[in-house]
Amino acid sequence: MIKDQSFASLGAHHSRARFFGQEQGQLAASPVLLELVNVSHSYGKIDALKGINLQIRGSEFIFLTGASGAGKSTLLNIISGELRPTFGNIVNGRENLFVTQVFQDLKLIENVSVLDNLRMANDPTIYRSDREFMNVLIEMGKVFGVYDAFNRRINSLNGGLKQKVAIMRALLPGPNLLVADEPTSSLDFESAKKLFDVLTYYNSKRTVSIVWASHNRELVRKFSGKMIHLEKGLLVHSGHACFI
Ligand SMILES: Nc1ncnc2c1ncn2[C@@H]1O[C@H](COP(=O)(O)OP(=O)(O)OP(=O)(O)O)[C@@H](O)[C@H]1O
Ligand SMILES: [Mg+2]
Image 1 (cartoon, rainbow, N blue to C red):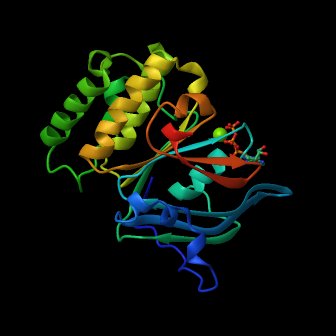
Image 2: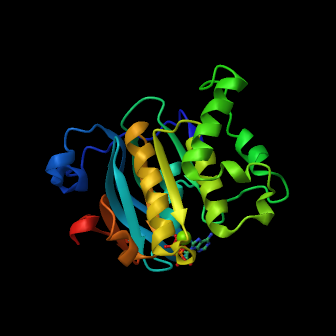
């Protein structure tokens, strides 16, 4: 998780007309939260991302698809600030941009309870008291269908529940932008639909922008939101998910 991260400023030589967000007329009014300008990343000789231009706007729900190895995790790690690009700029569109991340391997503490994992998301700059935090936590637990599992250890939960706990932990500190690296292969359509319904609720209720990475392009097509697609490190803009 990052807070108050400062980024390099936008280089003057970039053509703004190429940016994806500006081609989406209906989204033009939402302010840009974060902008990637000609971002590339290499791990040694492996060019994982090549010249990515992307704007993430307020309240946007963006699905990021691509085959295994296309660069999805690398892109999410750059958006969240976990990883610095080898080349290019990242520009914050607002002050105090707060990004949280659901990692591909979830990074939950396996041998402690759901509640103890979630308590770690209590940020005293957001919640004035433990009671306020617990009220939000309990409400969110009920919305996500995790409340009944609060006292269970993480290592006793199935994959879907673990994923929900990880998403709750990322939502609780009140991010402006949540990036999630989702292994959808374990989710059937109904479970995925329920999860996306809940996320859509938070997306609109709390105006959290979401970038959700998935292997499963077919699944993503069933939801509304913007879809972008990575192919061997290159970003292909595909438009609104449900129209593709
Ligand atoms: N830490 C690393 N060191 C070296 N190469 C890496 C590292 N992380 C990723 N790569 C390579 O970079 C490329 C992009 O990997 P990345 O993990 O971003 O893809 P992905 O789309 O998330 O794949 P998956 O769907 O399997 O999670 C791949 O060729 C991968 O092997
Ligand atoms: Mg990945």
